[in-house]
Length: 102
Image 1 (cartoon, helix red, strand yellow):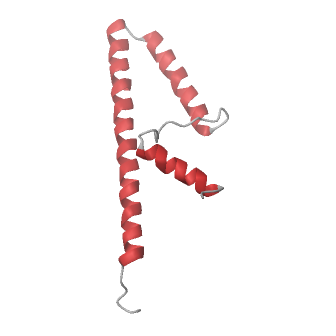
Image 2: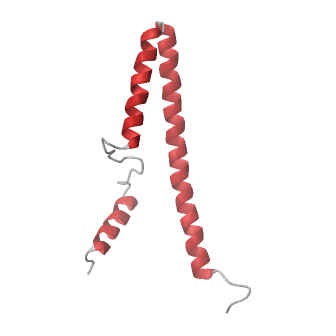
Image 3: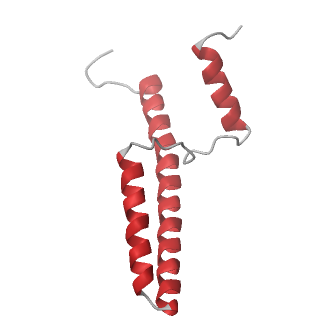
């Protein structure tokens, strides 16, 4: 029988197996540094857009979209690399040998 924290861990593994885990989907605290900086960035973009021509606004939109896609790619790659690093650590713990110790 699975109880307590084991239930949570088992449910997370099941969610991961069925593709229900979205690693970059998190709620952000309104008073966090991230939320404050995000709001500040949006305000700066709004101020800049008001100064730009229609063509320049489109270019700015394309640039910010591309930056978002690059960020998503980097987050995904970092997430994958985290699994690889963890697997390597587990393999070393399970099967690693020491030159000096039995």
